[in-house]
Image (tube, rainbow, N blue to C red; front, top):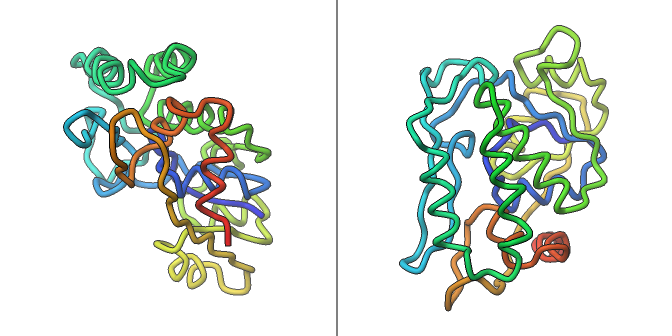
Length: 219
């Protein structure tokens, strides 16, 4: 099965689950930027609740991700400080922070940053999927149908939020929907908050992160 998704910054857990069930993940870095997505923001747990960390960008939402440049206004320093404050006492902070810091230093476009972020998550989750970029496929296809053709997709695995659209755009293609139900887990502060990025799981569970993510796909 193949998943076709725009890359996200420290992907949410449903996205991370796709990395564990798909044989191949095509990172659609040729799709337009969307403000209501995880393309340029991530959500972490803090002592006060949650915090959104956003990467400033220089272009509008109509631009392809691989053409959107980030703005160097000190956001990397702010992100590192926020993550240290939120997860400095987490069990695996010392093991995870250097690699995540390297992701933040990824040069190039917003797509380069988010692709590096997804690959980082795939490595920590020991994902079996082949991860490729749409911009590196023949013709750098920019729509779902074009990416599916260029990647010779036969079976698509997607998420509920886009399953109807994907099935309509790809008639005749076998489409599987991965339902994800986030299970309660240990976090860096008392209580449990859902809807955080995969960074929250990795900071708290390290090598066992894949097992935690898989709990959300259990029947």
